[in-house]
Amino acid sequence: MMKMLLSLIALLSAAQLARAAPPTCYSRMLSLSKEITESFKELQTSKAVDSCVETLPRLYLDIHNYCVLAKLRDFVAYPRCDTVLEVNELKEKARSLYTILISYCRRDLVFLTDDCNALEIPIERSITEN
Image (cartoon, rainbow, N blue to C red; front, side, top):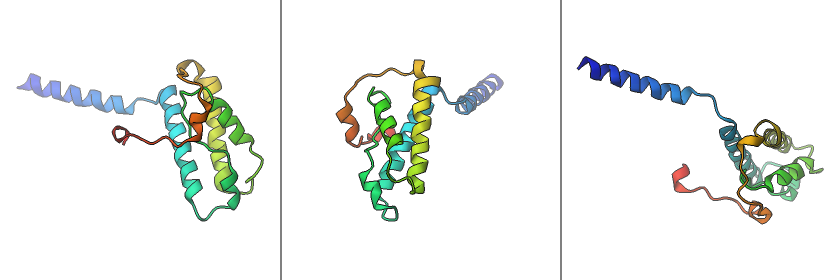
């Protein structure tokens, strides 16, 4: 009985440590790209922001698509909407993701496609991702 109890405690402790592990480069890229995509969608549907938001380049990201690099560069360099705080915050996140992709984590990422048109369409999340 005592051995079983100790095994259970060890198993639960291991599960706690696994959750406390620092994010990997890949998981950071993935979570930041999802965060940027969600923020962009919210910005597009918000009624309180400037009308220039409608002219922003689309920002539906897939870090496995090689075109994501050009998409991020274009978004950050977009000259309009500089007075909109939400856009500037989104550009800063996009700049951070671009830096992570091309420098810190470039060896951790595999591009599976280079379909630039795919980044023009919102990616619908599957039920299993929720």
